[in-house]
Amino acid sequence: MNFTSILYILGKLIEIEGALFIVPAIVSLFYGESQGAVYFGLALFCVTLGRLIGIKKRKLETYYAKEGLVSVALGWLIMSFFGCIPFVITKEIPSFTDAFFETVSGFTTTGSSILSDVESLSRCSLFWRSFTHWIGGMGVFVFMLAILPMTGAQNMHLMRSESPGPDVGKLVPKLGDSAKILYTIYFGISLVEAIVLLISGMPLYDAITLTFGTAGTGGFGIKNSSIADYTYAQQLIISIFMILFGINFNFYFFIFIRKSIREALNIDEVKAYLAVIVSATVIIMINARHLFTDLSDSFIKALFQVSSIITTTGYGTDDFNQWPALSKTILVFLMFVGACAGSTGGGFKISRIIILVKSYMRELMSFIHPRLVKNITMDGRRVKEETVSGVKVYLVSYVLVLIVSVLVISIDGFDFETNFTAVMATLNNIGPGLSKVGSTGNYGGFSDLSKYVLSFDMLAGRLELYPMLLLFAPGTWRKK
Image (tube, rainbow, N blue to C red; front, side, top):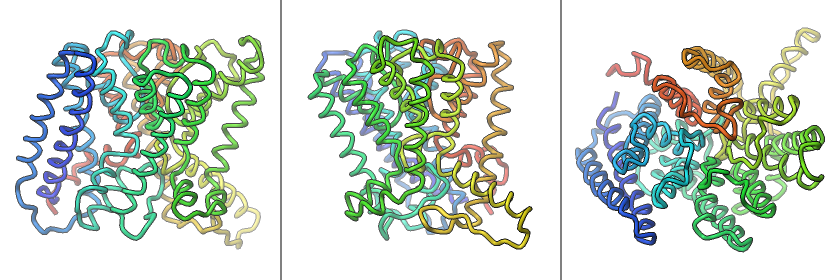
């Protein structure tokens, strides 16, 4: 294990988080809030600590995938630890467990909350809470790759460990340049959304914080009603941008960088993703029609909730706990499916679903034609067998984590619907579940043990399971 390189990377990460604390501190100056002093102090502390940790010269040792996985897992834990400290010091969330849960939920773009009154938080803390979504959406390690010089092995292993989806490739020959392109696209679409929301009449503070939540597909609202109090036009704008941020960013790379709309429209995952959204919206709109005032109201509420759940954003405009059984079942299905790989969305990912379905069909055909050799393809290209195998292993790991988590949090004595959807919502980085953790509830009633289990699920879901699971594998920590 190359501990020196890991410490260097973690030191740089702490420095970056220190610099990010400056943003809510500046916000506090605009609103004359005393809590800003805490953010300024933590900014100074983290920058200093990060420099001290990373000051030791790195040894020229081989940097394996194991180091990348450990660096990313520890990095996200450390980010969440320091990120929750302002809430504890300001006593806006006095319990460390609750503050840690809330911050993990923010960075992992989950949106699950223990707060029953978010409007009681100061403006700078609400801003930081939403800002964590934007930071975690594209990934802080991807940001590091864009600004720090690192070796090729470090680049690849860090990006693979943090990026969502079954496979990570380069957009351009150098991974550092790929990271810059991703963040340029991410920032550009975020800026467009904020401007469109401002044009719609939304206040600047609201437009920025809600853009953070939409871009990161996170879902922390700044009002107790989430998005319900905003106009239909603003809800529709947010719906569209949630869908856009749930699309594989290769789609935008082909359009804006390569100027090839044909390549963009040839992505099977994007076509399947949009087809699922349209189908689910139409079914729910018809099934829950009697609950809404008219057809347009039914369409906007259905589209918004489908967009919010499949992209794992978690914003809400209606209490879907009251929807018919079919509509709720579809939402649970969307919780599992998730968005596209290579997007800011969570979930199992559309690409994995496609690979599993095609693998199943291939195995089924082999019983009829034993000698048939059929490759699995996506976007007109053959999918490597190791990728197919990796998806199957991921599914097994996913189910095991799901089962164990449900069993552990069941100790609290809540009903099965609450426990199951709480784990589904956190493991898939969605936010709200059903029953007691529905759109009008929160996670504050769970015990500290359950909150740490659900925090692990949020981190595991955001980091594609393996980095967090390997932290507990004894072989991970052996020097050789």
